[in-house]
Image 1 (cartoon, rainbow, N blue to C red):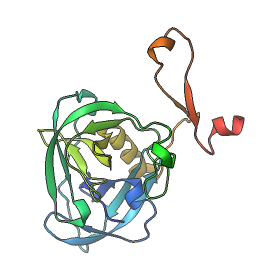
Image 2: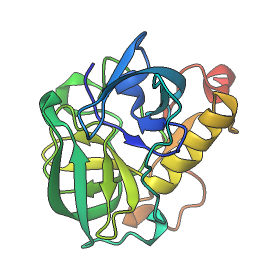
Image 3: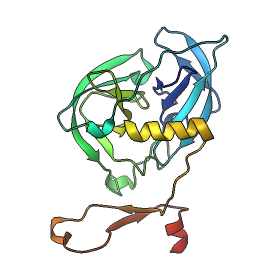
Image 4: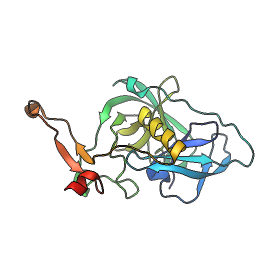
Amino acid sequence: NVGSGVIISQEGHLITNHHVAGHGTRFFCTLANREDLEAELVGTDPLTDIAVIKLKPGTATVFPVAVFGDSSQVRVGDHVLAMGSPMALSQSVTLGIISNNEMVMPRFFGPFGRMKLDGEDVGLLVRWFGHDAAIYGGNSGGPLVNLRGEIIGINEISLGLGGAIPGNLARSVAEQLIAKGKVQRSLLGIEVQPLFKHTRDTRGVLVSGVLPASPAAAAG
């Protein structure tokens, strides 16, 4: 697979998508200065489609890092920049605006069933930032930044409209992967959706699906 990523620690930890790196056995990264480095997988989380790999330089290196902003402050209409290497080409930056800050995918995507990335259901716990900055294959895993240069999202999908994993979620997952190699969370295993206008007076939760191999699935 080919994808993008962003360095988030001086030790060389790099955040990208699970569907880019989660099934890899060897990793090679081209930095902004065109230096090629091998890397190793630190951990991966399919439920948020986040993975962390670590660069392996031949000598001791302190890497420049990108910093996270507070993605909870992102609003519809904010200008954003999408960075990455589309189609494995050299780095690109495109400009857009946030069009939706809680974009969700319907349980079934068109006539093909659930949308899959690299043949796998991923990102089931994500409400994306929808944006119109141009992204293509290979941009997956690259940062979405605000005009201060802070990471506010990690690009994941492009369906004519781009979808980015919110930065606060991506950072939390990455920190757990770096510290523990995995993400620990309480999980019931159901997918829910907002109530429609005519059902808002109804109490309860509208369940739209059950995650496979989850406690909810085991309970029937």
